Length: 386
Image (cartoon, rainbow, N blue to C red):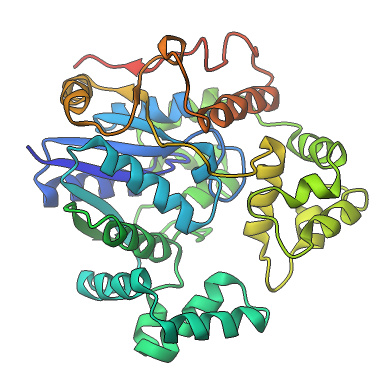
């Protein structure tokens, strides 16, 4: 039995995701596909365009068999931790045979070679990385430069695009786990991750969220996504929630937030009253060392009071098709981590799960949804019968 694992956000699920899913399934000759998906907040530190229940349902309707939630603590974090959480869950299922991911550049062998090097982190690489960080570069830029200096310019190019950065981290985690999971890679087709304009009939999720008029979206997404986007409530008040979270915490408390360091808590406290909107706040806090995406993640971590990643991983089911329910029966025989289908029936929830529940409550505040009817204690996984 071949089980393909995919780590994704599906924010929203578009034609590029459908292409990737079908290509990976074919290459892996997969009997089942399980996706580990970000919950209500994404790696960029932003609320998702639709809640996790809608996005997981769409994924199942478009061909994924089983959708599991990537815990907030890993989902709203750097590529390294995003990958650590996703790979940790797939490994923990005990039955995943293949990992599928997309990449903008490079040959699979090149990515594997670079990932092995990053996993080992020899002294020469560590020394160059520290030197670059001390020079004020962000971690991503510092690593890119260190790779270029040691392995050559070709390898630095492999670590600069969004999908490649994640691909390297996935492969690095497989190395660190000494995993038997094989990988299949699909070259990104059409628009790039940050492209504002569609290409080859595919629009990026960024373009769909921020740049395309509602009337333009339908041709770039499956029908299920188009219908859900039309019904999705607008998100309002995120900046106010962020401001309230920062104002209500001392600088010492902010210093304990997971991704905060080097006195950044003082800069955040200093700027919170000076900014009129979220974009302005991020701009005022960001620096060469702390790029805007990292600041956005930090602000979201402050909102959830995320101070550590302590706690075991778990497989929390968000949605399943008929194949997914069959796969779940197998997973329960092989899983090395807790499998959660109903949090009300779990005697003791994993600690990190509390942040997922809080993230849902915060998201419901943004959409104006009922805090009770839409909370994680009341909502249940979407189960689709074929």
